[in-house]
Image (cartoon, rainbow, N blue to C red; front, top):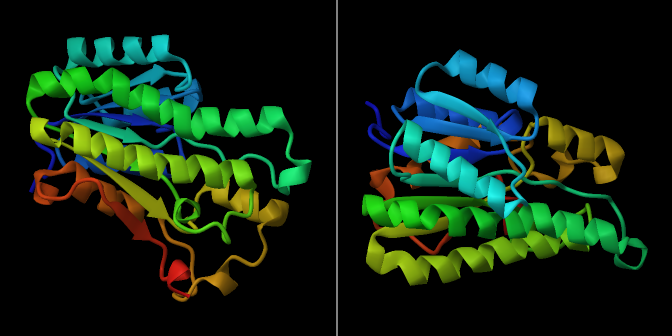
Length: 248
């Protein structure tokens, strides 16, 4: 069963980690996928591996002009966009608020929050032409509660913002058959998560009721559901996938 057959999707931060997993899942389910990332060697290698239904574009998600190029290229190659996965993000430094540098705060918010806005703004006109769309904004459990946001205030602020932006956009574009949802992962077994825990994130497993890190594919399965027509009555909602961490 190809659950995304006929869909054209943009996935940011697609060269590794969760983004790579999302791209592999979408291709397997019949989508045509535009992978974007700053890591051009890894991104192009993945697109080459995935075949003719995938293309890679080197892309700074904080640059609105580059977003315009991504959308134009996607439409020329595959047609109107149906799905956007705003996946690119950073944890930023591990620092308490009084020690957090202003430039670090602004950088984290630029990549995690502002880029999601630029992505939605750039792709919504294409979705309006298509008459259907699904936007999946990757947030975090740090966008639901702050006590697990070990990197910094900046990370928590940016992920809470993504949650709010998701709801506002969902209300605006619901009448146009465009759905917008946020996904809030807990601790995922990706290079970014491993790097963070090694830098001072503490004993991650001790905080997880299921006693293990998630595999990226487990998050991809949720993103796939939200991108597909199977979730046609779901919008403006936050979807937590954290093995029970914030239930404690």
